[in-house]
Amino acid sequence: MLRRLNQMPDRKTTKRSDPTVPRMAGGSVHVSVAGEIGLRIVRGDYPPGTILPNEAKWSEMFNVSRSAVREAIKMLMAKGLLASRPKIGSWVEPKERWNLLDRDVLGWYAASPDREPFLRAVQELRHMIEPEATALAAERRTEEQMIEISRALHEMGRATSPQQRTESDARFHIAILRASGNDLLVPLGVLIESALNHLLAHVVREGSSLRHTQKSIERSIRLQRPHTARSAVRKALANTDEIIAGRAR
Image 1 (tube, rainbow, N blue to C red):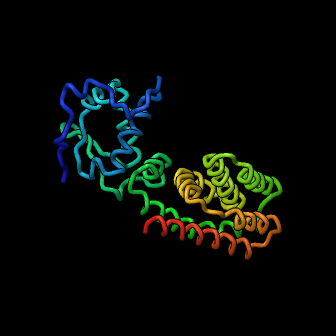
Image 2: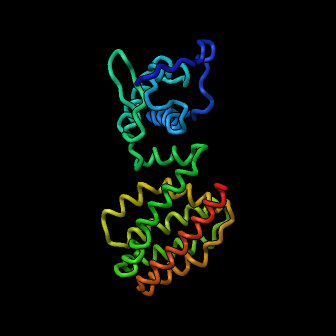
Image 3: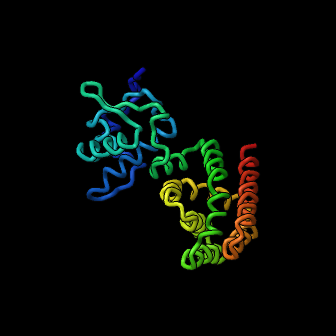
């Protein structure tokens, strides 16, 4: 059942721009607006079935043109978050219709306050994919791919900030998926990169020391030992599981 959004800012409030929306120029405005509305939907500000403000209201709230709002709504419809109908407006679709593998949707999930279930879901997906993908990488990797994996590991060790460490860690995982030789794993790896980045940042903040297991993974791939590579990944995932479980308690 569609629900009207009753608690809307009054006209005096809506004349000011929303400070949470970054000031961006040109064609990027609608991307910024879509990001702000999408984040609010994912974190539950607008539950499924809620009829959202019309173009004029959004335009006043964010101090942008109606055309920018219109393009933002189209973006969110393409991601499955919204549907629209004349004389009714736009409303939030049920969660099962959202494209959860969309890079932006994943990023909004990662930024939401209630992210623990999301982190666990990412971990479950990693358990399904990474051990076997890493075993395939140990069998099939090329010299160029091995250089990419080793470079990412080296950059992790030289990182001077948690952000640099997280970015290098993500590159390490994505490089292994590429080295698996399975073309379907590559786009999947890119799609979950936003989620993986946030999960790894979460692990870094907890002070986890996964350096030893990552070295074991790299060494197993380099020596083309799929069984030990698979085992090393499972050990690393188990360590991360413990960190997430400890954070939830």
